[in-house]
Image (cartoon, rainbow, N blue to C red; front, side, top):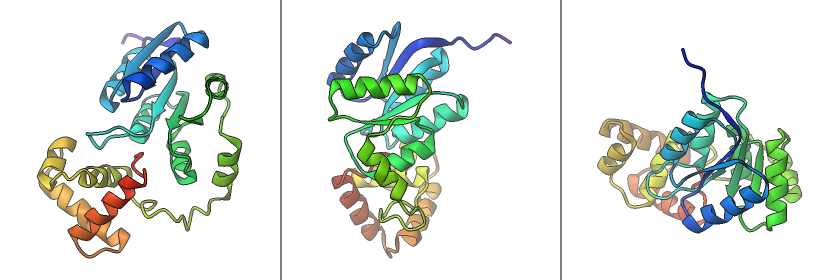
Length: 221
């Protein structure tokens, strides 16, 4: 069997905004990466990682359209390569979001509104195998009581969050089943499970929660 090709001095950037990709590429070049791979969706990002095994991944946590997300990408990469070094990247300074990213396998977390110097510091830390968190967020994450998180979505699985994200976009069960390549019955059953977890009695109530959470920037998973 052929050995897996690796690019330890390469960076993979996963973000669905062209301007962000362009800016991160320039910063990566400043940081001395020999190669920068870019992906605008989760599937492409995973395929690029599988093919090149770059030394570092920067993964946005929110991707529009498919219901897949940066957190699912992080988990898939870590399942493939447990030693992968990943810096999560988001505009949401929510400690629950940060905690989920770290639990999923990210070594660090950077905010999109941070300055270039701060981002480069986070990039260098994770590249070297060290954790990196904004100080204020690190304190908030440390204080989280994981048995009683206030976030309504904290009890949902990654797949349930994908489904809820797609529901918040107005997609029908049939469309969600097609998008996730699962059966219609799987979506119906997942919807029933989510209603039980979230304490709502109808599909309409579930959609109301989904729309409210999207408006609040909750769909990072």
